[in-house]
Amino acid sequence: MCDEQTATRDYEGYGATPPYADWPNKARVAVNIVVNFEEGSEPSVLDGDANTETGLIETGGSAFPGRDLGAESMFEYGSRTGFWRLLKILQRYDVPATFFACSRALERSPTIAAAIREGVQAGTYDVCGHGLRWERHQGLSFEAERDAIHSAYDTIGTLTGAPPAGWYCRYAPTQNTRRIIVEHGGFLYDSDAYNDDLPYWVTCEGRPHLVVPYTQVMNDAKYIRGAVATGASFHEILREQFDVLYAEGETEPKMMTIGLHCRLAGHPFRSIALSRFLDEIATRPDVWICRRVDIAQHWVERFPVPPSKR
Image (tube, rainbow, N blue to C red; front, side, top):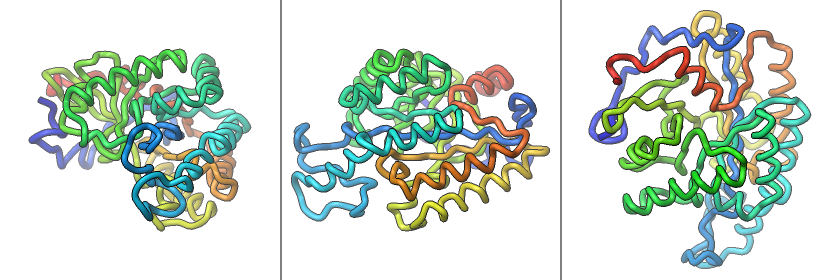
């Protein structure tokens, strides 16, 4: 069994005395930019599903059953245009990033897969598995979930030149997800948690396993859920989060994850948030902009498995 995804929960975590993260060059904050690439992997009538996926699109949800050509088109914006706008911003500022990628999306957009592969080979980008499809795992049997994770791992590795170091389900894992990840043996970490500002170890199937928490707070899904309306508003949220973490980081360094989606943050006015944020932190010393795998590898090396998790 796996703690924290089954019968037990840890309400205390690191408490009042988190470990000193000791990021490279004594950075106060480790900033990880995550670009979710899902377009083409979402539920679709053309793929045999009953309805078109309407999650995280501009109209806010399903208006009728069956095939929704408008929703399909909004997803297509992410792969046709949004991905490239975000990629060019990352390239302009010469910063590393992580792609949460669905394997079917990569299969259907070979030029995007090739661009990610080029960055992976250069050591600029890394990939975290985000599903065979962009689907809720809660509707899958244990066997189907295991097959999906294994298949995605293999396909992502083939298309991007390196297997995914981590895993992140759509919204939430099942009680079997972490067990499948651990038993697979090829994953360094998972990000199926939102409960901390630092990585931490758990025990699953009698083995230690690393969790690198993700975010729904610093996430552009806020545009669709009504929390923010403009790129300037999202930028302000990013800046305020960073400022607090940077101040705390003098004595207690933490990590900051930024979650973006090609069909959301890839629109022109929303992309301003990422550009402005990168402009600002470029002038701040003691900031480590890094890939997610860099954070995981640092934690493994600097904070090996504690006796309680062995």
